[in-house]
Length: 360
Length: 131
Image (tube, rainbow over all chains, first blue to last red; front, side, top):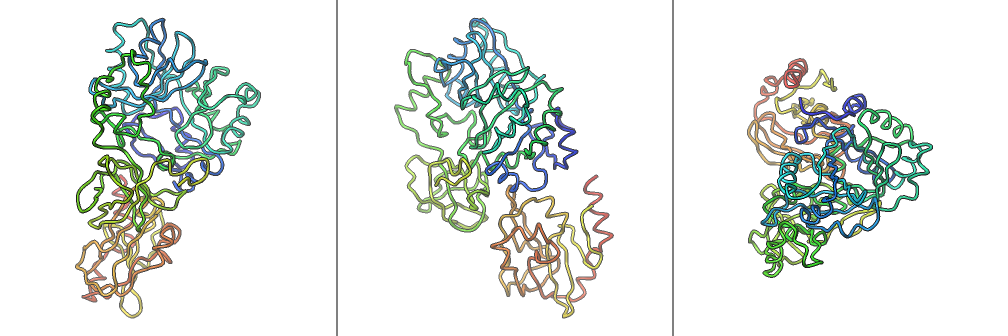
């Protein structure tokens, strides 16, 4: 038996198919992964993401620490509640994890990190924090529910009842604390919606209220196809400690300015940027029939040119799509070795689909 | 428990086999198997006229997240593949024992069918796998 979130019994009651997900017993689907995918693109679905780890950083040294720890710059966060996506790098520029950091107070930031990387992340953070004045608290008392889709906010407001008025004007990528809950207008699907952190004891009740408001439960299977279509990387598949953000289509998350800011991995990234990258992460759309899968080989002119890092069938596009790490000089066409056959694919720049529609 | 029709025979790799009046065999995957795989999105059926040995992988079915082989239940020659599945693979999820059939074969040995598991044996095997 793996670890269980406060919503585990709800998933079982809703006939979820439970699988092991990095040591957690999580719902992969509640029947049809494809229907759940469409539910989020077209209406509103919810995901239990309580397995992810919420880390609170408090103290006068927090801001300086995060400016050292993260490749993106928390000094960009001017407004309270605003969120920032960033990689946390090692000295070689390799990605230890990707995360979201929220600016809550001058001396209080909150990070949400991946479940599978939690232990190494915390060890790294503790080690790097030694010379800064702050405390690090893991908030395992919190559950987290992502409500996503074009109608997600309206339905979440219904479930929130009287509290809805306090979040209705919340801007994209902002968080606000409401009656012991933290409501954030963020997500991992390419759709509008909220990620809501709340005390574990309240999770089942709120989940039921969302159900009553017409939000359908969706498993981690749909979450994966939604994020892939939306062009969002998955840690452990699309990047890890052996590659840098520059090789992972995450250049936009590296804050090069101000140049005097010294963050972990900066030197390695600077030299890689000067020399030019040999590999990059791109999107692929399969033209022939079949399904792209992780680790399939990308071939150009008969030579191996890279590997798929995330591949799947994309329900919104009704085609197979992938991310692949390929030689930086790749053109617009390639082949992928699928079950001993070479199939044709086009090279594209993600996202593939967002806000209910294909965007290719 | 998923649907396991009494009149069919079964394999360890979760194919069902139906003997038609003319002695040919129709093959698909069981309700249990389609449920384990989840939403199917791609099916590749074998070419008509190809010969396979017992246990050869002869068709491919892919769900959103994984690819699986379909195996020859007995040795024989493929006499038809369900080409309609190329456009509508979800039919296997919806009707695994009917329109979701995958291929038809002419067995090399007419007696081979009798060596396949009956419904009760298959139900028992699935129950053991789930333990």
